Image 1: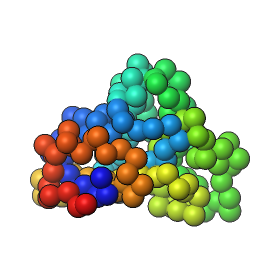
Image 2 (image 1 turned 45 degrees about the horizontal axis):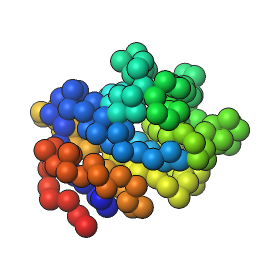
Image 3 (image 1 turned 90 degrees about the horizontal axis):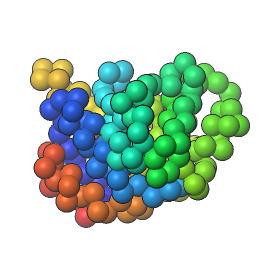
Length: 165
C-alpha cells in the first residue's frame, strides 16, 4: 500500500479502520496522525489498540494533558502520544523521543505534523478531514515503506477512491 483514500461515515467505522491497520502493524512502526480537533484521531487509536489485542482499548483516552500514555496488554506495547501541547516547546522530552524510536513498540502520535523532523524511517501517515455538511471523515493512509500491505483488501470496503500503487 502506498496511499489509500478512505471514507468513514461514523465513529464505529473510524475505530474499525484503525483496528484493521492495527492488526498488521509491525513493531517499530510510527503512526503519524494529522487532523483538526474532533476529526477522529483518538477513536482511530482505539481501533489500533483493538487490532493489537489491547484489552483496555475501550477506555483509551487522549493523552493531551499527560503527553504520553502506554498500553502493555496487546501483542506489542502501544505508545499513544499527543504533540498538541508541545507546539511551542523548544524540544521533546527524552521519554517521548525514546518511544518514537522504539523498535519494540508501536507509537501513534496525534498532531504529529507539529514535529515532522523527529519521525523515524518506518512511518505510516494518517490524515483526517471532516466534511462539515455530513460529518463524514476522509481518512487518507500513506504507507511509503509498505509496512502493512495486508490491510489493503480489508480496507477496500471503506475506499473513497481506487488505491494508488
